[in-house]
Length: 164
Image 1 (cartoon, rainbow, N blue to C red):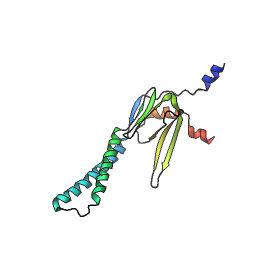
Image 2: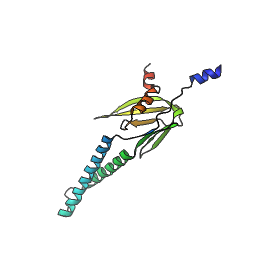
Image 3: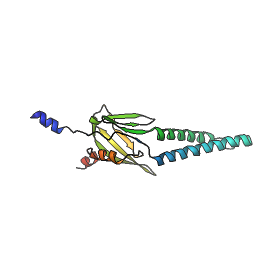
Image 4: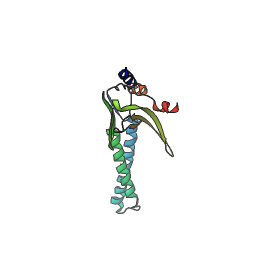
């Protein structure tokens, strides 16, 4: 009888649809535009140096090079980042880090908005029920489909539980 009660109190999380989700196309376009702008700025600086033999505002060169480096970083991240769903785990992979969370270690879900001074960013969060596993927090920049949201919305809503 005790075993049945314990088994009935264990939350069984269904596996997500097996898929790999990439960053939305419009986000990639914006990152490419940032990179192209940075390349244009650096080319204009180099052109001015070669045509006139001098550069009137040398303090701008490090700024343009920093913007170029940022553009390269953002493009590489946009084209390589992915969110993977498998039968046994979900993973968020970016150039900064990879987080893998086994399905059995998912406590529930949250949707959060972090507001800055000029804008806000929406995140989907998969909370871990085990301190050995990091929770997954991903921006809504991924091209999630209906099957993913159907699975995600079946998870326990930790925001709703907190309001009770």
